[in-house]
Amino acid sequence: MADTTDKTSETTAAGSTATVKEPFYDIAKWATKAPEGEKLISTAYGDKVTEDLRYVKNEPGVHKPDPILVADNVTRRFGGMTAVDVRHFEIERHGITALIGPNGAGKTTFFNLMTGFDTPNTGTWQFDGKDMAHVNPEKVARGGMVRTFQLTKVMSRLTVLDNMMLGAQSHPGEGMFRSLFPGAWKKQEKENREKAEALLDRFLLYKKKDDYAGALSGGQRKLLEMARALMCDPKLVMLDEPMAGVNPALKQSLLDHIISLREDGTTVLFVEHDINMVRHIADWVTVMAEGKIVAEGQPKTVMDDPAVVDAYLGAHANIDLGDDSVLEGLEGGNA
Ligand SMILES: Nc1ncnc2c1ncn2[C@@H]1O[C@H](COP(=O)(O)OP(=O)(O)OP(=O)(O)O)[C@@H](O)[C@H]1O
Ligand SMILES: [Mg+2]
Image 1: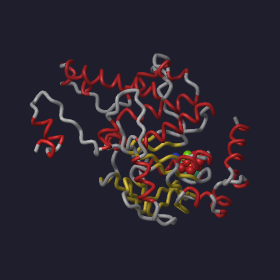
Image 2: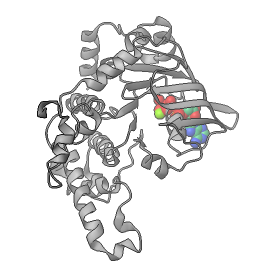
Image 3: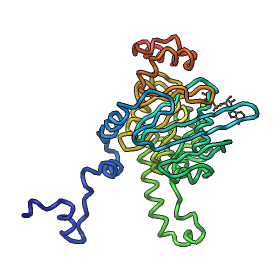
Image 4: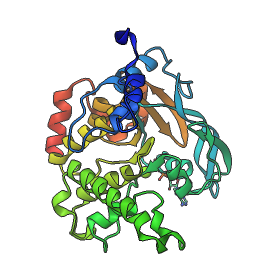
């Protein structure tokens, strides 16, 4: 009889002191609670996304099986120029989506709009089922949608660790009333510090934690911004050119970090001009030009499409995108 008892209820019945085990199949909870410093090897989310996107048509504005962000008729005009004109756009939950397109296509402006840093002329969008139009950036971040900036915005006069602490959500000691009870927030601060240190370790910045952020190289600032974005456990991270200015030696680890975000259950949207990176880590590619979504689909299909290559990838148009060795040689040559 005992053999038929379900494991969770067995532990509960054992007494109040026993810890109730998380069900093994609940991978999201299990994944985010992985012991500090332990690398999680799971392809569960990657496999789910591959399966979900397998039969989605390669066409602009196409519906996805499980979207985390859905945007409709989002426009932003600057004077007479329309910077963003997105009719319909969805991001598949748990996937790594690349947003590519030439300079001035409207990619950063679109990020600004989705995350509340700018206000559109028209448009609605839902993040994780909630309306996000007219919501300020702090609330957007608290809702689980966090972005990094093309030009990094680290606080130069603060230490690396203090920059990380600023990324933590709603510090309980910040309220006037609650600040009178240090016991309540000291525990939280300790947890935030431990989390910050673990993330800095993961992003190879632990040794720099007491240095001023202003003393970091451009690439290290990019890493710090990404690490800081993860302090509030976002559901969706939006990375605006995470590779720009990153030393080639760090690029591989940055790619690994982004893949590990997906393994942890975080959805990633990134803007990137580095075609090599897009080809290697994206589950889905969306192409923007003159404010519009002009193509989207599986990376191989989109990036091998001569029309996309010619029209939207500009300087990269003459590269044989099917030949990895050419791309690797090119990347080394630029370094
Ligand atoms: N605050 C602003 N005022 C006026 N024009 C702007 C403003 N912000 C962006 N633009 C214009 O909107 C267009 C889209 O710019 P955006 O920065 O979004 O492009 P992008 O795709 O991110 O380009 P890049 O790849 O160079 O970063 C450009 O023509 C840009 O000059
Ligand atoms: Mg930009």
